[in-house]
Image 1 (cartoon, one colour):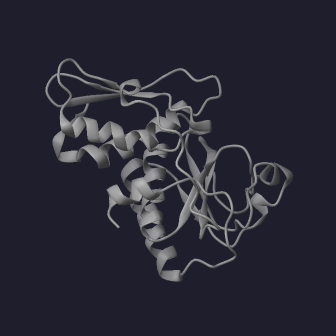
Image 2: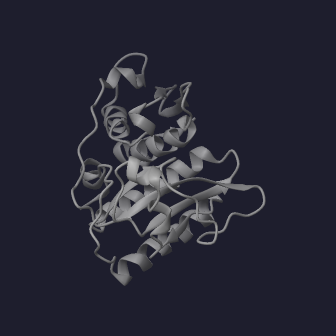
Length: 222
């Protein structure tokens, strides 16, 4: 499975089997997380064998079950977009390894002894991780025109980027983002206003999807 195939196959999964993640997969994800943290200045952390975060009433209300592994999305305040970008990079690698995931904003219990939050940082959310009891379902897709702004004909690489971005997970499927093609091959990613928040985090997730779909060699971020 390549990156494009993983983006298509990935769906949010809330119920997991009680099946441990193999040590080699844990190590591969840890190595990627370390790489992301060095590159992006983020503080993502992989938490394993910790079931308490999803043992409370909020998790049950959200129909989460069987979760004992997750990624703590920790970073500097205001780093929402970076965390979305690098967090989704790890999510897609997990999908390539045969694992399932779900970005979780509120329906979990914080476990401060299980991860580190330094001064000036905050826990933005977590990402559940494991072998899903199912593979999830595709969220409803909206027209590409809702997310693209182009003067003239739309280049194929740009279209493929936006199509990949539309597949990105966002809070309650709000998809408050747009990609604007500027002069030449410069692309601006914009977040729209959101009453429920998470728009900047969602933008980072969508930016990673766009980059994979469009091909990094075809454009530069404005």
